Length: 425
Image 1: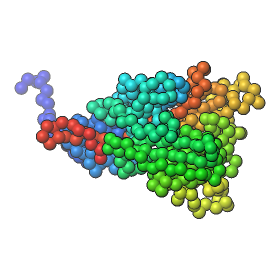
Image 2: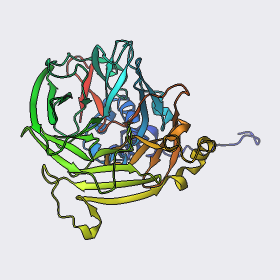
Image 3: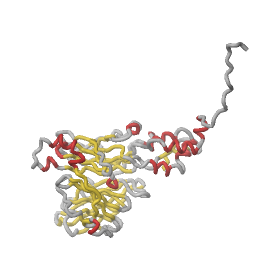
Image 4: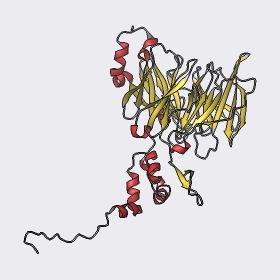
């Protein structure tokens, strides 16, 4: 051997941390998949191999969902003018947005009614408020399933307005309905008499779930667009200082009085109600001093009876959960638009509530004459601007949050042809 030749030591034995051992170790694979950012990333990873798909779609799912609570991905903003159309505004996770389809296909003039569990329910077509059809899409489902599905037209009894009061997606686990249509009529001959028809689309066919008519203890005035479906019951805001509830199974109305001091100031409104877990109803209200108040009420039965006492801070059964000063929280956004307004111009300084999340986790507010719509997380007080209306647009604006789908939806392998088909754990 030459004196200038260096003899290399033998190669060390291959360690267990090689790529093949890592990717075939199911315990380690669980830990890797748990660190993915979102559900759509998990679905993409599951398509890598049959082994990964089996691991990702098995008993691993509850752990992944527990560590990836639904988060706000973006909002659909709708302006209810004669050519209404909805626009998606991304708020979080731009990498997810880039791999999703938040459009409406080629359907004209889409207007979003509801977003829930990863689905978007919208109407389309027509050059006025009388749209020609309804459809549903799921932006985050893997690419072969993100097509828009046009739904059958619902029944239209002659005694109800052609335009529905509300279109809603199901909220309860185990509800096999695709969507609900709610029609409302108040009778001119008796302003305290209300008729509501609830239709449900199930297995491709519309059926009338209930038609309820009753003479209420006090006239609702106008029944406002804000409508919530929770635990099988329907809750509609009114101008008369109460929320009108309907139990479709019993075909019975019930009245939930608002907290003392909460009044409906002007259209579109200074309050909204939203659903919560465990049969809780929330109310978000902005008062004349620009204080945002969050109320909750336990709905144990059709009359909202509970054990809350006046000593614990209740008002007509409601409990005040939080109070937030809009001046302190949003002052940097409010001053720019309000610095030139007259102190006596109440309309210019009014704060409108344009939307809210389940469990009153967050709220969307329009800051008076500024036209700025903000997102506020009610626990952390985080505030950010999400939208600004055009100067010549003075129509009602609604904001509907779009959350991450839960649980993830995976393809399954056909035993014979090995083709992917949709499957939800």
